[in-house]
Length: 398
Ligand SMILES: Cc1cc2nc3c(=O)[nH]c(=O)nc-3n(C[C@H](O)[C@H](O)[C@H](O)COP(=O)(O)OP(=O)(O)OC[C@H]3O[C@@H](n4cnc5c(N)ncnc54)[C@H](O)[C@@H]3O)c2cc1C
Picture 1 (tube, rainbow, N blue to C red):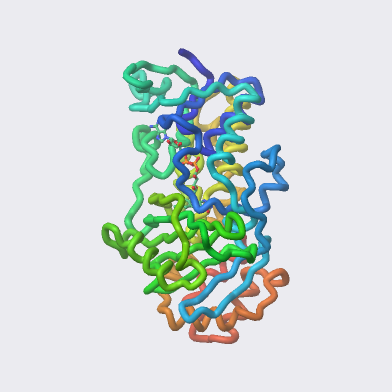
Picture 2 (tube, protein in one colour):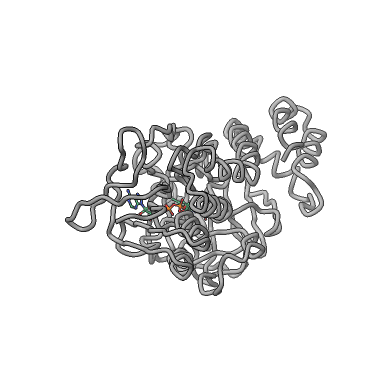
């Protein structure tokens, strides 16, 4: 088997990369270890409406709920309301992630990519140090797939980067441990994604309620791995639900557990004959844990870069670095700024979070920039100046 490009992983990052590479005429294969694209779902299923502007999806079958905005609750339940445009990359639509992923895979196939399920990459195929493809296991059969370019779209647990010698290790302080129920028989008539903060509620993270209908919602929790022990995420989530009147009568129709990288992006995402995309490249917003928009944005740049490399028949790091320059321009500064915000928020006790929420509850967010917001906060609470000063510099640049 010989392809121009083999993409490891059929998540959103893999499918979008494959689609835009195949569109240029490149011979592309996606391999996926699971037996169904997008299943099991490991996601809160929130995504920004920014994706409408990108025109990357055709049907609307993947939309479960159309959100008006987000409500962020401080530990004392002071509520800050944000419009969908301002609420970050997890608020806009609540999706059916299985249908969403399958739709992206369908479009990749339509544009020429091949898909091989039940196929796990077990190692990189190398000639001395040169990457020549991947070794795979397909059911009980083991064989090699040759390719000029290998794409690591293999998610948070990515091995492709590691096998290529790229440091993708995640420290416990940069990893959120998550648990989520899809609950039915609850009351979620308002079209808002709700986020609940507080050390007792979710140390180093938050609880989310993302409606998928009038009586169905994803109710989940993410807590920092460095602040938690085994089983803690589920226990805290059960506790939250038991104490929340509108959720108490909820019955689960799905449970999931997973992890989200909340770190800075991998600095070097290209090598000769290799690229990393999506969660494998740590393209996740460190505040919200949302990664879907970056998969789409970064995957398109990766696919187009691969197309260009195949046309030129040049697969060296320099040629592929067009992708790296592209994603860095598109969203690296924002991820790095939000990593700083995450660190600052982690340092804040519940009292300070309440104080922040109280200051922000009446702010009209459509009319204020991040920098303006920081200035307004510091004016009201000069004690925050020291903590927020590093953010002022980067916010000028983003
Ligand atoms: C609990 C939870 C809630 C989340 N909520 C949100 C949210 O609301 N909004 C949002 O934007 N983001 C959310 N995220 C993050 C989001 O799910 C990820 O950013 C997104 O899935 C990354 O897409 P990806 O294509 O990079 O990787 P994935 O979607 O993880 O896809 C990787 C694929 O690679 C396959 N694979 C892995 N290894 C191999 C191998 N060796 N061989 C073959 N195939 C392989 C996997 O089976 C998988 O199908 C959440 C994550 C979790 C865990």
